[in-house]
Image 1 (cartoon, rainbow, N blue to C red):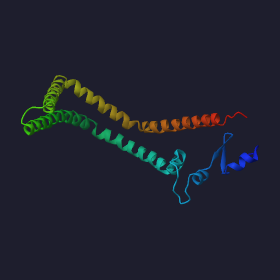
Image 2 (cartoon, one colour):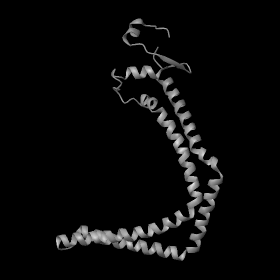
Image 3 (cartoon, rainbow, N blue to C red):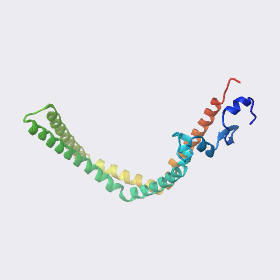
Image 4 (cartoon, helix red, strand yellow):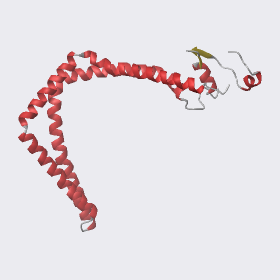
Length: 199
């Protein structure tokens, strides 16, 4: 680049740049020198330096996420029905157990103070509320058991569809690439706005 005002150019140190779409972007080594203390430690938690330093971690995480997604699809194919039934049972058991522990805790507070307190009353009625929810949950399951079985069959069918359509794993990756493109385009626009001067 041509320096218009030599005094102004001498006031700032020069650094390596890379031309990207008519803009001079500092190179990674230049950024590292600017924000480095000389011993390899950075004086600033600069966002771009952090992105550059963690580039391989980000790419590795993308690969790991694809593997996890494929494993998830396979597990959905094998255990979708079992997971659905276990989830239903666990919700019922959790409501009952939380009610029991809340009631026990309220009784412990009552025994400690020798009389009822606002906290023990709140915990007592919370326990009653949880047991009522557990009873209502059980009644809804019992009255709609046929619909529940149909819903679980739909879940199994959806799991089979996901397993047979493995390209669905690429949807998050494609979204990530599109988002990165939008982000880079936004940075380009921001650089253009920041480069506007009165000259």
